[in-house]
Length: 115
Image (cartoon, rainbow, N blue to C red):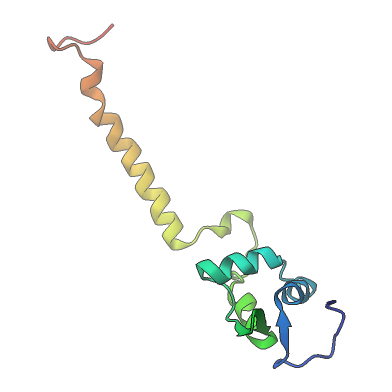
């Protein structure tokens, strides 16, 4: 089953392999295996079942792919989201706190500093 049909409608139903190929051809690289994994774990495009066949409506698959796009960025460092920056900040705070928390390990039980 090829993905060479270019005039299909948004209501067209695509099998998993074809859906992956068409999404990839439209600039959203995804494999059929990834779609299968997402179908079981969640996070993928909505799908229908016809017997044992899994079918994706083209409009749903395209909407799903477009929703996964990040906002445009002009530098590689812009990929951090606000929540990511907060996590990085908390990790740095934790490291600085651990430095003072480990101070007792540098002392002998008698209270004198280790050499």
